[in-house]
Image (cartoon, rainbow, N blue to C red; front, side):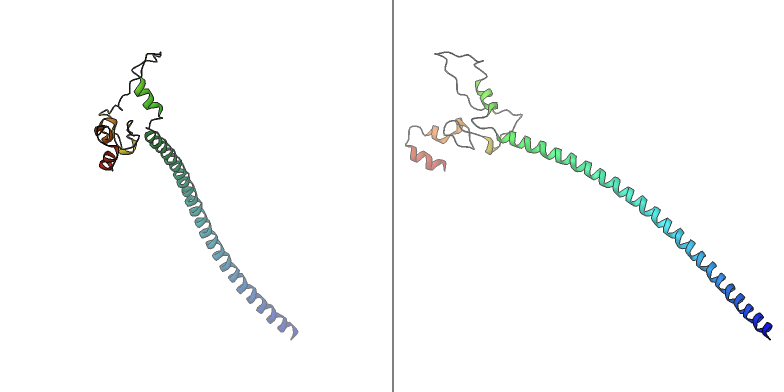
Length: 159
């Protein structure tokens, strides 16, 4: 009897181990499938991150180029706004005719800002050497035109 009971227990244990081995094989199979999916997803994410890194580098480079263009545009804008009586460019244009001649009897000639067809003068950059106001030239100055009249009348006509 004991023998039968031992044999039956052994059979039960063998059946249980067989079921456990089958379960273990199924788990190994699902684990290998998940590992494969994980590796595929990992490789996709690595490639996407590499592409994003390259895209960011190109955008940073483009941003730096645009910042350089902005700096150049700002410097050009400030250079164009500097056309006033203290400007070195205007001084050169107004004194280029004397070629550095100096002396007691030499009088510098006041010239009007040359208006070239190549360059367009903005109202903010035009300076009158007669009244000192911005927006018109010396030869179009209303104060100079009404030189014979009273100053107050001319100023009200300009305003």
